[in-house]
Length: 388
Image (cartoon, rainbow, N blue to C red):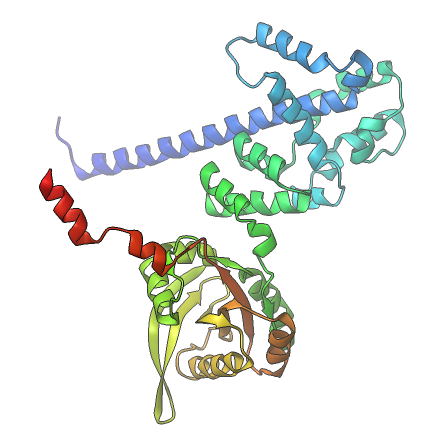
C-alpha cells in the first residue's frame, strides 16, 4: 500500500485525537469517582448515619459495599471515613463555594432547605434535627443531583487525601488545589510543597508594592514573592560567601526556579549594567511572564541592612532605563538575605522610591569544616579502590 504525506498527516491527527480522548476519559473517570465519594460522604452526614445506627455503621457499610462490589476499590472503612471528612471539610464555610466553582446553589444545605421548607446552611447539615423519613424522602428526590464543586473534581482522590490531612482550613486547601491544577503537580510534588508549607510562605514577603505600583499590579506582585525561600537543595560550608551562594543557586537553577514559583524565566547572573561611568553587576536577573516585568534579585549571605535597599533601588532604576521595553511593567527588586529585622526592613522599604521586596532564605544543613575534614578525599577514595 503506498504511504504518502496525506496519510501520515491523517494518522498523526488521529493519534492526537485519540490521546486527547484518553485524557478526557481519565478526567471523566476521576470526576465520576470523586462525585461518588462526595455523595457517600453527603449521605453519611445528612442521614446522621452514626447517630441513627451507631458508631459501627461505617464498618458495616464497608463490609456490605465490598461484598456487593468486590471488583471495586474505595469502600474500605478508612476510605469511607475520608468520604465523610471530604464532604464535611468543604461544606464548613459557605464562602469557599465561590472559589470551588460557584456550586453553592447545588449544595446539600440549600437543596434540603428547598425540600423541607427550611433554610439550612451546609455546615449545619450534620446537626439537622428532622425525621428519618423526611431525610429518606429527600435522598430519593435529590439522589445524585448533589453535585461536587467543579474545582474539587479536577485533581485525583489521593491528592485530596494529602490535602485533607495536612491543611488547617478550606482556604489553604483551595490554594493547594489551584496550584496542583496550574502546575500539574504529581502527588509526590504536592507532598513536598505541603511539607514545606508553601501556603504560609507565598505572598508573605515584606514589600512596598502597594505604595509604588497600581493596585491591580501590586497584588499580583506581592503574591509571587515568598518568605522564607527554601534552599534545602543546597549544601554549603558554614562560612560560605555570597558568591558561593550565588554559584550554588546558578548550578541548581532549575530547582531555584521551582522555588521562586511559576512564571519566572532566568535571564542571567552577574548581568552588567551601566550607571554613568561605572559598570554594575546584578546578582541574578529574571523576567516574570505573567507580570511582564524584570525582577532583579540580590543575594545577601548576611542579616539585612538598610543600605541593601538603596543599592538594589539603583539596579532597579537602571534596568527600567536600559532594559525595560515599551510594553513591560515596572521592574521589581527582591533582596533574599540570611535574616532580617522586620522593623528595619520596613523602614528601608518606606524610604525607597523603587518597588522592592525583602525575604529570608533557609538552608537544610551546613557542612562544618570539622565535619568536612572527616570526609575522605578523592585521592584517599582512589587509593582504596586501587587496593581492591
